[in-house]
Length: 83
Length: 88
Image (cartoon, rainbow over all chains, first blue to last red; front, top):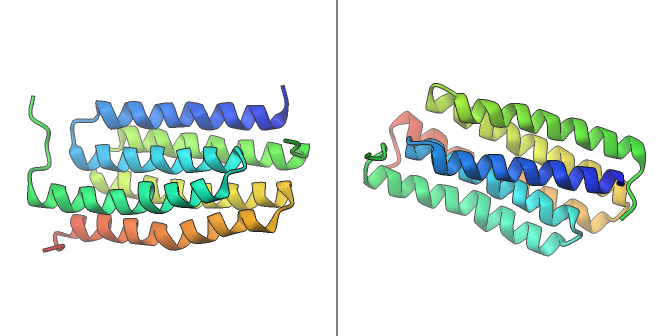
């Protein structure tokens, strides 16, 4: 098992943790922040797989722009998720 | 893909720091804690990308870290404006 494979497994575990947090948290702002973190780590995974163009698109659109748009939507609606 | 062992160990340590920040992102009591944790994760991922770009020895890989370091500012700015109560 090479060093590269170890780095990939660690990144994938972090993506899973961020995604579970995004589903599990009831505060929608915190869920959006966790989703942004998971998307950023997915960009790092594309980077590890030697796809820099995909990593740029994922980081720019998935992590930065989507977070901003979700926060604008939370601003217009309510923040807490209802049971 | 071949990564030299010192670069790999340094990147693994940075990923451990990202895990610690992810714990704070999960349990943080206030939204400000979570925002700071996400900003820390941003910085650590940019550092990891630069480190791995040096390990792979390709200059084009640095552009990803550069673009993301510019764009993460926008996301953090929106979160801070929302927490402040602005963003009309």
